[in-house]
Length: 193
Image: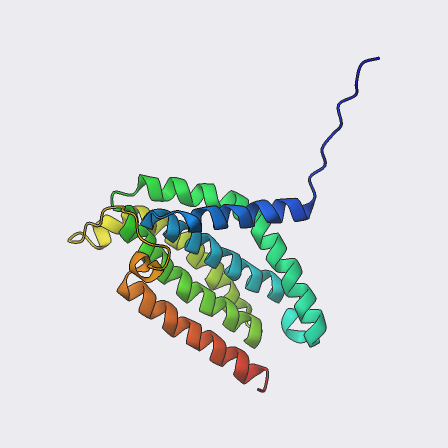
């Protein structure tokens, strides 16, 4: 008797795990460009999580319901990152100055994440839409990084895992920290803590 091929069913959890595995694999690389790509994809996941949570009414729900919505949104965002990652890779490979383009992209995504958090906690759709729009804008700007910062040329070299700040660059790091502080303050103020 001929054997029947077992059809492998892929669950949503498997797809989300594949998205997370891609981020982890890129983050473990010692190349600056791959570390920046992993951070970019991770920020994309956070931005999309905030947007989906807002779309599902997260800001107007109880704390427990909000937690469940955030987890579901995070899993869906990881799945979507499976399509976003290859697009980011193509866009960054086209860039003349890959590192500077990705650093500029991280600055834009830091602002986008702050807008996404603000949209969620303040329940303002315009801010959420702007945060998504900035994702698209940074994908266009990444290949133009060498034109925006023409005097700086950074080679894609290996760095220690602990040198993530070196990979990000000073400006990206400072803007990222400032935006992170703004995000925390927004959450604390709106949640009444």
